[in-house]
Image (tube, rainbow, N blue to C red):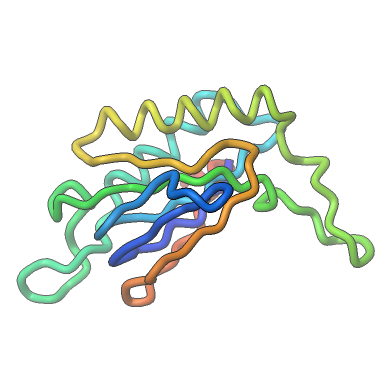
Length: 149
């Protein structure tokens, strides 16, 4: 499972012209589910994201997690994070999970995030979406559940 986590001052996702999810300060999480992912991958990434200390403390140091700043999370499904570009010019998405499995793990990730002390908004799984954000910092972090250390 891969995630692109962006610290934002605001973000929103639109589907067919309507706002599906919108947050102020917090994280925009683009989430890609791989074919061999499991609940353990979702648990690992969600825990890592909820505890990631990238918000400024009183000294201006990145030292606080999202719950400490009353932040929110906007989670958007993004199968293209599993693109394989090693051959040719057209990316292959064979490593991405099939839609049923990807939806189940995407929704599981969201349920885990909602257990944390943060508001969670979402995009619409499988829909064509427009994402608008203001990256604060900029801070952008790439996480992969296979890179457990």
